[in-house]
Length: 160
Image 1 (spheres, one colour):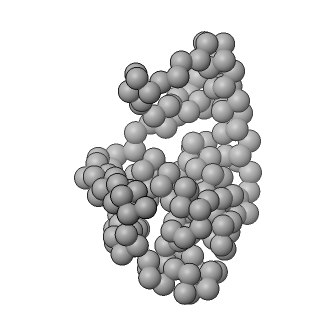
Image 2 (tube, one colour; image 1 turned 135 degrees about the horizontal axis):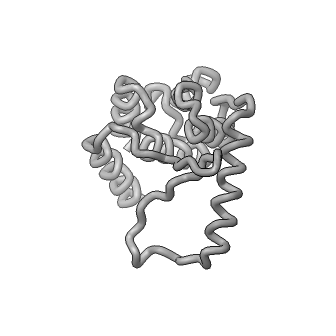
């Protein structure tokens, strides 16, 4: 457990040095927005037949189209970020960066203070929330304000 936390901490620290310029997350073709996969080393790729890859990308474009324009009714209570974060990320992919970033930076004001006082208001405790926090910081981090990123990094240092 301690090794896992240490590795996660190292990832956060290393990423703090990364370029803050948002890398393109989507490509636009035929009037649709398709996700750009995160670069993966060849030994770790599980190649799909091209027809399956095309089918998957069409589904992903449809997801971005639908969820990127629906009202985001997510909340930060307990594990409700498991709904809030994916929808906020879909907003960013759909080109609604300001709304998506605002939702990703929504404060944890609804949880009992003892749940996140130690981490300065950041929720690292609930499993679904932690998975969303990692994506939020690493993939969508350039859309977060510098102050929010700094507070997030400080909270993570305290948590580990």
